Length: 101
Image (cartoon, rainbow, N blue to C red):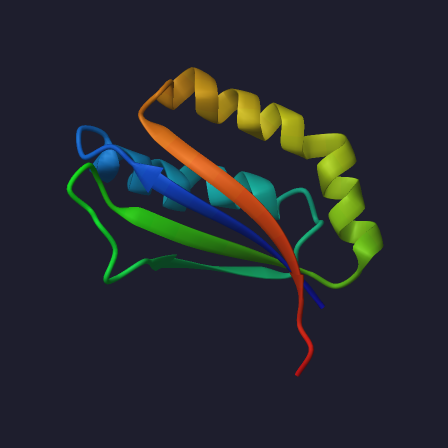
């Protein structure tokens, strides 16, 4: 199982709307690609949140093939949509992990 993690710091001015968008639009659309089995969304604690909260979302892919399909076919459009909607009100970084145990 692979875990595609996206950690995002969101500006306080849009934090509530961003979270609603994630839960009601963005995550369901990503899961709708069929590339991921499940997800979880967490808010980071013990981090500097003066400028806004930080969230980590993990999407679970059953195989490298499914993850690669997402990256190849869908990720660019989802990133574009986020940038168009939220402009410079967030910053994100991504990582791919493999579950060992």
